[in-house]
Amino acid sequence: MLTERGRAGPPYRGMTGVSTAFGTFGELLQGVLPGGEDFLVTLPIARWSVATFRSDPAARRLRVVPDHKHKARRLLSMILDDHPVPVGGVLVLESTLPEGKGFASSSADLVATARAVGNALGIAMPPARIESYLRRIEPTDGVLYDGIVAFDHRRVELRRALGALHPMSVVGIDEGGTVDTVAFNRLPKPFSDVDRREYARLLARLTEAVRVNDLAEAGAVATRSAVLNQALRPKRTLDRMIALCEEAGGLGVVVAHSGTSLGILVDRSDPQWARKVVHASRGCFALAGNVATYMTLGFRQDP
Image 1 (cartoon, rainbow, N blue to C red):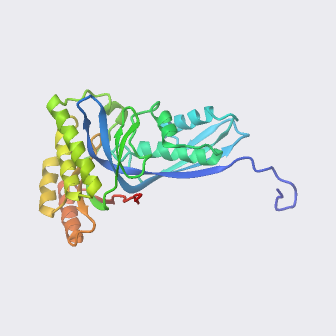
Image 2 (cartoon, rainbow, N blue to C red):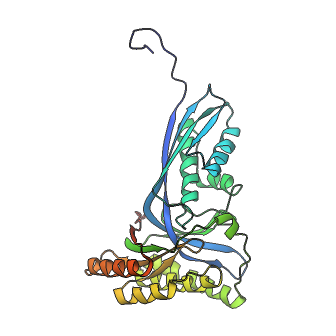
Image 3 (cartoon, rainbow, N blue to C red):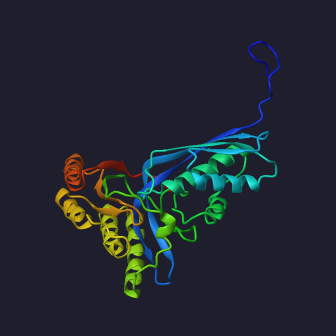
């Protein structure tokens, strides 16, 4: 390689990999099944984490930007420890997902990191390999799979891919503060056998709702899951959000079960969509003093 003055410069020694992972607005459903298995059902939204890894085989140091992303640094070290050739480099994370609110921001960071490092170093990163790393770090959301999935977040493994729903708007509020997902998942679950059987029925209902694209049924399941979760991490505004959803003509209320956010679901194909979103937005702002609108992701399904 030649410099501007025509002299030979240092050879290019590394590669750059870039990748993304979407976040979620809480979960459509989260609980415990009769066999004791924890599970959640994802609600992907159009917000992402973007990871860029610039490798340098001559370097012996890893740098992560911003430097508070300690879990991403740990994952990066784990992947590079498995690499046959010593590699250093810089990982840069950029995200439109708020932290500690229930948007799967940490999971999105980690999945994007694994994919970016794989792209840079030519390492295949199928979901099973990413899961093997993530289960050594923390409970993880199912954002490494396209579409809506039932996921065991504590074991970090897929239960079932459910499919996709037509896009919805989520008119959301934040009750404030943050939640440490790792600490939350250490809490004992206060759900009875009756509750666990209900969670199994709700999962069956939601599975069918996604299969036939029944947004109203999906919204009803999400609302019931939010109510059941009051025994574990109560939301002080939930009752008023449910009432506002009914007033606005929304589909249901979705919550971040281990976060601070609640949202009203509105069908984007509804002829009254704009009116309903405006009604819900005004009510949310009056209720919480803040409001933000998100769009759920639709995914192309194989025939």
